[in-house]
Length: 193
Image 1 (cartoon, rainbow, N blue to C red):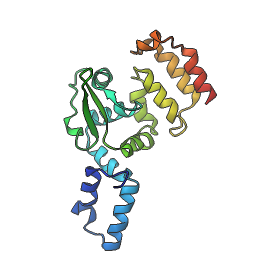
Image 2: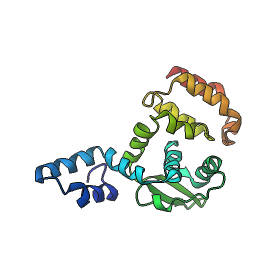
Image 3: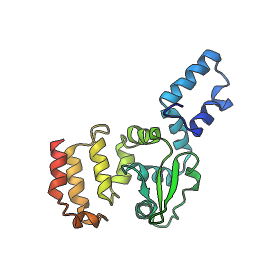
């Protein structure tokens, strides 16, 4: 099984509209290319989404891993004050959703790591698109994520530090204070890397 195997990718590379003009050799090459680098497939799927679906993808992409539904809703409602959070159309194409049985929270993540790669390289690399999320950051984990990908998306350490200082009072992470987290620790990590 290929590391990027996903029903959405297979559906796309077997779609007659995508392959009707390819001969047998071109088709084999097309399959291999799209499995090894499914960027084009995720791009086609992303472009089909409305503004709200694209924003949900960006919100989830701004976290390191699984994201609680309540966090996504919080950020979504700050971006779109009058819009109801709906994600059902994203489940088959982009998202895995599971319920954590211990605390009964709904958790979201991408169906394949290649979706996260697409979000990083093709959405967050665009300063206008990432600014939608950056100006609505509410969780320290999002800062940690942007710190990890700063070089990939050409986000300078100065921008990241300024953003952290600007957003510090708006963060929703109560547990960071309980654990003795200090803003100096985070800024030192950014400076050292």
